[in-house]
Length: 607
Image 1 (cartoon, rainbow, N blue to C red):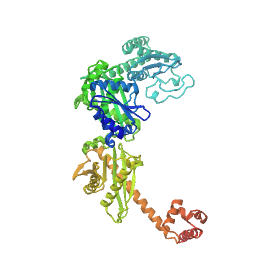
Image 2 (cartoon, helix red, strand yellow; image 1 turned 30 degrees about the vertical axis):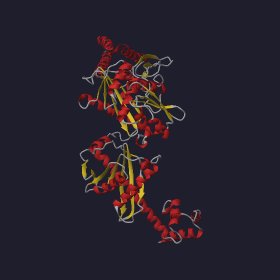
Image 3 (tube, rainbow, N blue to C red; image 1 turned 180 degrees about the vertical axis):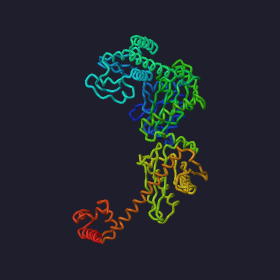
Image 4 (spheres, rainbow, N blue to C red; image 1 turned 30 degrees about the horizontal axis):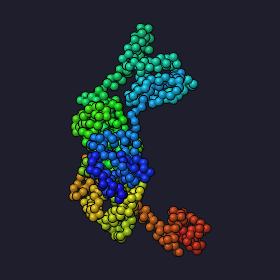
């Protein structure tokens, strides 16, 4: 680190590109800078302030090279070129532009129509290639819905089987029932192929002529089927022609959500005011939100052939004029960058952001699908950062005895039970909730300093601390963290007269949460969970104490022996049923002690 810091401080104060390498001389990160010395030296000064992924990258740097350029713009062009060439581990890496898509008609008695990404050498019939996978997926689904084609994997040529639910809700013609012939089924497939090849207009004309012929021949059942098919096609066409945005016809919308150390980026692409494609990207969080958004835009459009006139974002980027100039030079396209604050465009950005949330939830199977409650909580109590990692504390005792504390953790609005911790109060023998809280938080901070470079759950500090209590408890906690020069927002969870959550408090302020049902339910859940966890620990200690007192009443059995017995047999009942031979197998228990234990429980049963 000393070598790297000195080398960074000797860099020129000029624009350029820096290339970080590991011990094996592999390139692990490439960046550009307006002033090389200032940017590169930031990596090696107080590394603890950097984000987790930045610290991981810095810990792997063995050396770095740099290339001086005449301007920051030249540095940007060179950076994009080098990243594309070397694909460094710690840069945002996106796959190349989407590949082609095909529509496949299988070669069987009852053919199926499928969306596929590859054309293979089989006997099937393929239509394509198509560039826009989004539209082709929708087209295949529309064809299946219009012509009521099956989507299951049954072999219709073999045995007659009972149809599935799709048949009963009129979504499938059910060839499995053997009520439609191979000939008539293939007529349907040919109509679907006509729809693929010639579009809706020609298909409607063809089907209308067939309907009129059937009607003239008094085949009213067939005419009615064709009428319904024409109606379905017209409905699909009408739906597809709905315009989402009237004001800006061609645009991309990019929105992102950051979940502690992960990022979900959603891209909506519009042409003619209609959404024609949607993409989502999930990767590790690196640096800050503005830098991340800028880095993503560079990587994304470096891979795209088509770029619209308008780029709509959910937040700021670094040096937008430089980005616009780079896109013009590399893609020959003049673009406008918009960051809407209200109106139709703002609603579209919010829709894009909601899809980014949903993509993250789907990827990580988050049971609480609406962890946007954390954003609402941040705004309500005026936090600087979203509280993705929350610790909550409670104290429990019985008339001053067996003082204990509990800490529960909520990560991404969900309980993280592996990080829960119990505290047995060591410095107090009497009831003192403030003193107990002071001991718990002091031990918590001590554990943080001892484990901050490890993977221990105490190695990180929370975004928010919640304490079961009011002004006094919050003041005690704030003083402890202030004395340690640690800045974490701390709030008390206040209950009403019926012991139900009603508000949050800090700095002599009461923040009502009952008007926001989502936040109210979330805070109630945290308060109930920390109370349950702490009380259960207190009960376990009392039960253990009661068991020990029963056993220490036996002649020859002390506290040490009672703990050995409970560890081996788990309960008083199991100990009472054990034979002398089983008891003497425990190290530290001789035959005389075993017989004393046996005699004690036999006497208890006769009483």
